[in-house]
Length: 243
Image (cartoon, rainbow, N blue to C red; front, top):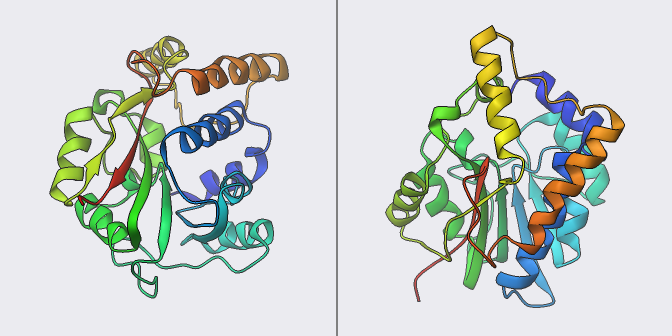
């Protein structure tokens, strides 16, 4: 990602509505569907500044990987131990058959060979382990945001399902989320493209709007997995190796 993205992440990951509400949604999804042991070994790949690590630590012992040096330093301070730097898809030095849960949250779209990346993660799972995946949805929503984040693609349910199958994995259903605010996001993207306005600035809005967006987005923790949501900005799933 461009340096500015990591800088904004460091500045806003504790206050921005998207980060805060998404952590609530992910924690609830893990609780309901991951079925991991109480003493789970967990690995987050591409942890950025480590803003998800305290949430993941509620489920077990957490290790993390981040390739950006400055973000890795911040994440290490949050985790209380060194964050590794093994890149996907090879994950050099990461032990195989070690983890009950691997979290890869808005990361796979950054990897040119997504199938190899998923297969590499699968080899690091214990028997019965899961990979928690979130990715941005809808290639037709490609914008400046994707460019500065160095995305290779956005996903449809079909393209994500194909990558999962090609990696020899199964999923527990491909579900949209960040759906309640999707109409507003779509309108903003359309206006941006019509006016030529760069939409890559993801700094938080004014406090009242930031709070309102957080509350609306966080409502989805009660919905994701329990009922089909309409198209959203993201897809979420849990992957496992066939028995």
